[in-house]
Length: 466
Image (cartoon, rainbow, N blue to C red):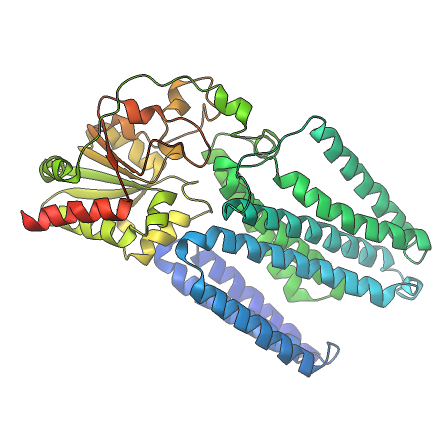
């Protein structure tokens, strides 16, 4: 039986890797997700065959409770809430790893001497599973609260913050040494529970200085943490497939985090500790000059009617307005009239990695129409009309023009280089990062104030009535 279980774990690992590879392309992503799900099913069935695990009634109860919660949540959570939903998933993954480490410690407490030569490896893995799991849990819960606007989204900085973080990290190291050196001692038990408490605290301390446009990076990083915690938990219970799957999640999350940091032209340390979008940073942005020119949907129709090339830049506002389907309808109409339509996607648009890609895929926008920032910027001066829908920070020209801006140096989509720019917004309010946007005052910019879905629907109606 053990041979069958090990072979099943190998098969599951292969399916995970193949599925992950296919997730890197939009046209194979759905199939990749299905293959990964099959891999997880194989891993679960193989684990259930291991008679050393807890009894089946508890397993069935867990499957039923977790399955119902997951299914109901997936059906009821709207697309706009997916970022906070993902944050909660990361948090539950971290909490699960913490509980695995805690349970293993409870099982071995006072008997670590019987483990043998591998005692240090087991205690280190247990400590890391608890530590990373605790940080992931509270960090993810705080990220959820910020994304769901349960609390303010701006970064929170206080005097001596770096020192406090440093002291907590030092305490982690000391507690770890005490726990690993003599895990059966009373001091080790105290160190273990102190580490749990500090991990919860550090998750909060590591997340509160982060806000604004950095939230997609945070979600990616916390996803990586949850994978690393799962990997450590796999070493604790000696489960091969958990080690492999946790390693894949941890590594892919780190790679994605690095890609997103490069897209923002910032280091990970700067993202984690700079307090992007804080009051001090935002106040340094230059004052706005020029006149805001608004336009009605009917007047915008005449400009769009003559356009031969149109670029649509989606942002979180489009998700909030649920405008993706009517935007797709507008895109189809423009193409039927001979215009070339493309969708420009910034790597950190929305509030989680790939948010805009998922949103447009839901509306069946062809993948061929999606263009990345580095590919669309060189041709932007030749574009007749650029339509910005609910995106603020990723099209802010202050990133090129204002050295005092908090986002100066961050690559953005150069929509202001297009011949005409339509910006669909409810008001002149700043974006999620809280940074003023001089794009609204440019000579070639026209503001279309109102709900994005209603405004685009009026444009579609104007074409149909013509």
